[in-house]
Image 1 (spheres, one colour):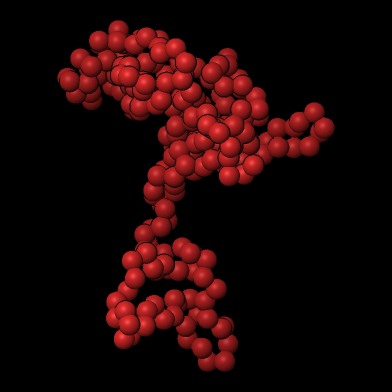
Image 2 (cartoon, one colour):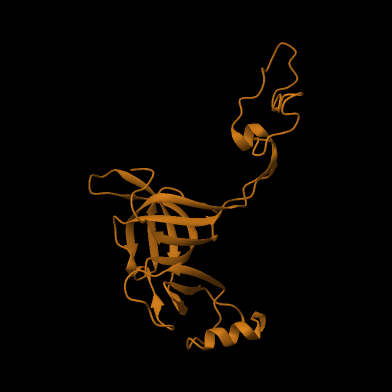
Amino acid sequence: MNGLIGRKLGMTRLFNEEGAHVPVTVIEAGPCPVVQVQGDRAQLGFGAKKGTRAARALVGHVKKAGLETVPRVLRSVPVAGDAPTPGDAVTVAIFSAGDRVKITGVTKGRGFQGVVHRHGFGGGPGTHGNTRHRKPGSIAPGTDPSRIIKGKRMPGHMGARRFTELGLQVVKVDAERNLLFVRGAVPGPMNGLLTVRKQGGRSRHD
């Protein structure tokens, strides 16, 4: 296996062998039971639902894997190496310090934002009678093309979207507490669900 489901606990720092502090995100990753295996992908579960809140079809689905409780979330991840057996548990032991990983989560929602906050526009002058301090300015020529080009950076909904951060490094693995310490920040709020996968090939940060 090369992937795992977890949740973001927050950020802290660790000290390396040289004594320098390293900012890390703490992730509670797994243990994730294997619910189903199809081809080169495996369906993993994470957490637990109350029995009264689980659909009958879902209860029957997880019973085929020999599970007593219904996972809170199900995700499909690619299988690397030998395929696991339904009912097995995947833990943080699949990772080791120094591994490169990519982490997917849903970013924090910022609501409706203007172009200065959403896209980093500089805005207009702040003095000399100017009244367009945070406005976008001209958005398209009037005659040609006489329309707004698709993809134009405009005010709108910001955040609350699925995002994958690439090239993050595993600093420490705590198998006893199912904790993963990853250098840097990852998308999403505290207690937000994450998918952690091994980085295949080079990263954009190399």
